[in-house]
Image 1: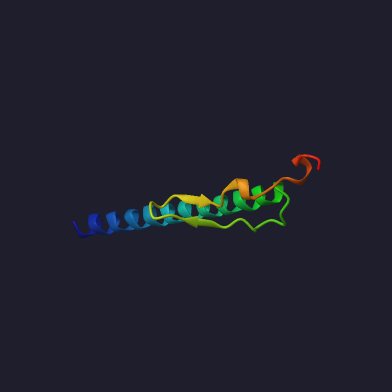
Image 2: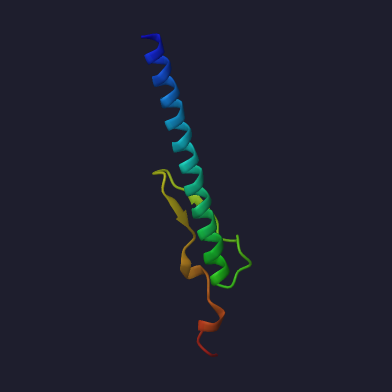
Length: 75
């Protein structure tokens, strides 16, 4: 019985570790996406702030605040 409890503890720890690693990977991908989007709209990369709202979803600054230089109407 003690062996069974130990096995459950080991499996539980492994699953927890894998879930934490997956969450970190998702966060890194979201940050990379924000950096790349900023690069596409003419920034230097990394200038768009990505925050986590109260609901846990990631939000970005309003895209209308950024302009794409080659798509601006001629003055």
